[in-house]
Length: 155
Image (tube, rainbow, N blue to C red):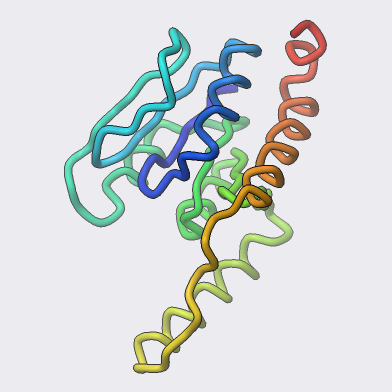
């Protein structure tokens, strides 16, 4: 299993959480973004800067991800593609996307986008908080315990 991080808009509060897990479990990790993003120094983390443009980082992740890999992203259309490739996706707030829920998230995202495009004002996303980081850490730990369990027990 490899870990891919959609680095565009990646919350700073999650960087130490990811880095500790990567170091402890020796997980090959790829941070892909259209600007320099740093989780910290690690022999297990590779950084790739892609060209500017809508969905360029997403396309790079889609090209690289394989069945069983994990992608950290807040991008629901990207998560939908990842799930269709039999890989896994977790968002920044700890939501684990799955075959059972991704279409519902995608439909809600598309509905909200069409409402905004019609000129209606919406609340937008609430600010990222410590509570969100905690939920993410719990979900990541649960995922790694299930899919990277033997390594987790040794750590």
